[in-house]
Length: 252
Length: 252
Image (cartoon, rainbow over all chains, first blue to last red):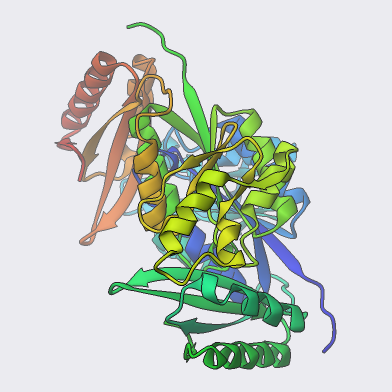
């Protein structure tokens, strides 16, 4: 199989409400799943406060070492929405009112009380940025260099991801198969290690659980090579069966 | 009110399964909520891969600038459990088998097939560390300097947090009150900003939503000063009422 370049991304979730425990984040999982399909590896996530310095530090650290950086949160109309300012500062550019974003908001608010100063804040972008459509509430997301600035409300984030689908260059998709087993992972640890070692493109993750009073584990095999992945899953299932611990293809 | 020192913490969630989108993290919210009650501010969360260098880099960055650092994940018996090795490397100490952890595991596995080499991996700790009890499955969590190394399975993490409750010094608890309103946040943005400015110990977060076809927002006011918090919430409710947008105490 031809080698293809690996594309990487990072995600910054911006919001005091996640760090206080008040709101349970839903964006990490949806961005992670979406990136997986685009053939882009999510390497790191950071959750940071609504704080200019914290956002700028994370942006600069992560955008330099990944192909793409995504952010969620802090792009609304209120005083606590400082993401655009923080990212512009990190990029070393000014904040401007984007003419197309302004037109979108004028149109959206025409029948909803008009475009006030607060609402116009949602047309502010780092200079040189382009827009990511928001089909729900008008106010667009923003692409500034390799940074994709998205809303924090999960439904709106989801719409922005849809709008970006297929537009970012990715590499080989990391394929994934799960084999489950009613076993304590510690009983099969040596076999797992040997099986991974014998299939050099594969990584095996072991995820134990307790359900209905029983101990089990799912073994998740990942590889960019479909043949090696299938061979590794077969070897794993045979290894479990040989220990009288029947493998359950697809996981439990 | 007397000033008290602010105690801070960071959290590192370790696991490829979160970054791939396969597993939805449940530990950020539970650690965040628990810290809130201990009077400790969660300043940052990072999700990193099962990778020695990535874990060590995050550990060193975050433990230096926080009072406490918590990690979840990667302390089981299998080959992909590398958290202890990575943290020992970050701290510049050796990994040893902790005698008390070994005794706990010998006891736990006495009726469960005995203490194999794989299971003994769960007694390995950075030299100088102490243990965090695990009432579910024996294998303890670990305290190494200001780093608290916990399990990834949320139920076990929860038990470890219970065991730590009240044992870490904290400062003033950040109090929090919510005022809800069926309003577009952009309509009241100016009033929010002015109300926050008038109550200098308070921060107001604005969290919009759509439910049942209606637009609303919850305004979350945070302060360490109970009196100023109450005054800010009153001012906020009066501001909303004055705009014919009835405030809903406690949030929607």
